[in-house]
Amino acid sequence: MICLENIHKSFGNNAVLQGINVKVEAGNSLVIIGGSGTGKSVMLKCILGLIPPDQGRILVDGQDAEHAERDAFLARFGMLFQGGALFDSLPVWQNVAFRLLRGALKRSPAEAREIAVEKLRRVGLSADVANKFPGELSGGMQKRVGLARAIAAEPEIIFFDEPTTGLDPIMAGVINDLIREIVVEMGATAMTITHDMSSVRAIADKVAMLHNGVIQWSGPISDIDQSGDPYLDQFIHGRAEGPIEAIR
Image (tube, rainbow, N blue to C red):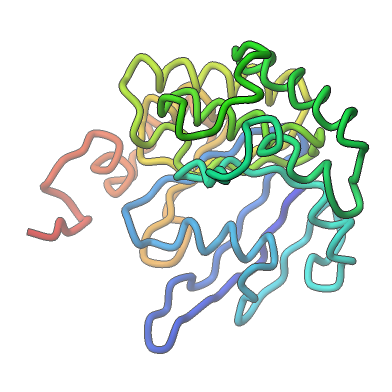
């Protein structure tokens, strides 16, 4: 479903991506791990066309992303943003139905609200939440609203950017379980960025570690503890000593 071929991206003298090669099979869940500032979010933005790569090719379902018709291309994607990215001035249902109220996917307000309430129920929120504003919700509830918005248009591909950031371990576990259930239920292809190893183990079919601008290691989640890769081993166990230099 997604194929990155030799993707490079620099910002001035800072070479962030230095030859990324990644494939994500349709219906699979790939989790990208790596230290802060290694280019994980840049990679997602390149796929979405928000940042043009300097070199290489990105294919989505066999189609060159650079030459795709933008509205139809983006309609295939849903995204759960790291900080929630909810609109404070809009009620919850309008946040969830944001894409359904405008553009190529436009529905009537009544239909959009009905879909929003249905998606809120799918992530464990009752219908009365629909008329509240984001500021009235807890962090965990806001994350669920963001997840409901990500799936509102029934996307084929869903990106999750640090889905459990700022949540306590119990709520993080709830969100991880929801993500896994929804991805499987929808048959969607998923890419997740996270530092949370509990999320990795809950969500991933396959894991790829980004380090020094390249994919240092990739493989099925079942191989992660016996990878034999010192970079991956240091990262997943949170060790200060190892080939990855910790900033002191």
